[in-house]
Image 1 (cartoon, one colour):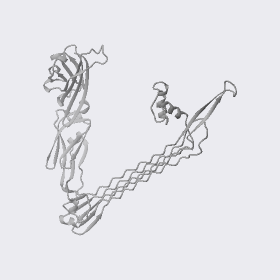
Image 2 (cartoon, rainbow, N blue to C red):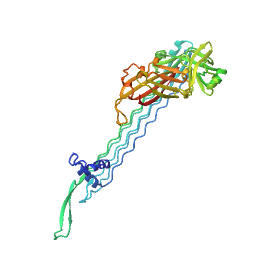
Image 3 (cartoon, rainbow, N blue to C red):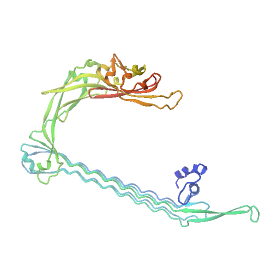
Image 4 (tube, rainbow, N blue to C red):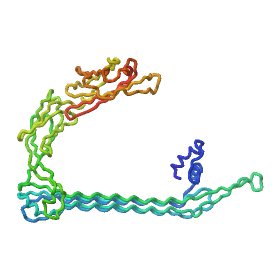
Amino acid sequence: MNRAIALALAPLCLGLVTTLPLPGLNGCSMLAWAQDARTYGSQGSSGRSGRAGRDGTAGASQTTVANGTPASFTLTGRDGEDGEAGENGSRPRCGGQPRNVAFHLRAPDGGNGGSGGRGGDGGNGGNLTVYFGDRAALRQLSVDARGGRFGRGGRGGSGTLGCRCDRRDWTVQTCTGTPGQADHSCQNTRYTCRDGRSGSNGAFGRDGTPGADGQLWIVNQLEPLQPETPAASVGLTTLASQPVQLSRNLWAERSGANALLAPGSRVDDTYQEYTGRVEGTVSLDWQAPRRLGIFAGGNVRTEIQPDGSLAATFSESLWADYTTRREGDQMVITVTNAVRASDVTRLALGTVQGSGASLTAAVLDLANESDYLTTQFRLTVRTTRDDPRDNRRPRYVTVYDDVVPAELVSLVGNRFELALGQLPIDRGPLARGTYAQLELTAVRSLGDNRAEQAMSWQGQF
């Protein structure tokens, strides 16, 4: 029995529970045995875990021109290495079992086997970019871009056997008093020895993953592609006054790569084909109701997407509603609305007043941004017939859990008024004197941006 079990059983032997059914001994007997037992010899130690196999390196990528001359390319990834086996646990030293001792004995445990190391991942095959004027010239290229094989996980080490007791039980006589006198008495106490636990075998290491085959990229021209600058991050005011130049080479994914090459070639079956180029200047057209200077300091990342469209990503501190358009080599980002992100959730729950059909709740926009945002409210109303002053655990019942209809929300200046008494529910739970809990969540959005703010109220209508 280990120390954790002994500690768990201790309160059971103090009168809380008299017995605990266990094989051979009840709980208290086992506890007494565990507290009095001593181990002799020395325990076996655990074997070390095996080292992980190294991952294979990726194959080299190359660029070539297909001119009809046969050529071969070996772009294979290297294989991952196998993981090392875990070491076997060491055997315990059983030593000599003490004889006729006045305590229980436990033989030494065997050592656990070490875990096997994981196998290394195979390296990916290299990519091949091919320029050509005649598509048939691709058939003269023999390409081997296989990914490397995975390494096998190492074998777990073996656990070793625990020691066995030479003698499993014995009796020791203990006497008190003076021999021949009335106070002299003797009693025999039986002691036992338990075999040591055998060590567990180590876990096998997991296999690595095979490397991916390299990919074919083809360009139907002989001139090298121009360098590209698909994205740039600049300040808002800078972009408004100084357009940036962006460019991107466009590719389309196709299938059937191996059929384009010489028989026996091995590449990923999907390939990329060059379809053209987008380039031009990107400028910012600020059409928001408030001037740009209010939002100065933020950046915007402009990027030509893989499909050729223009996208903008504004800094986290700014919410912007925008559109993009492309006219020849001119690309324009038009911002029609903007707010600071920090102002979006500056709402506060105002007064909750009235009851029944006249029940209302007010929400204040402390940042005064509601004219520029779309705001929706979700509401949960719970009421109780219990008086919380007399009942520490009043039983609340949910009477409404849904969006507040837009026609019941009005905005005057920076104040939202919610006509809760007009909700499509029975007005009985909203009667005067009813105790209630309100959980109100404002959902605010602008363009693709969205945020929520939760507010709560508890009281009596």
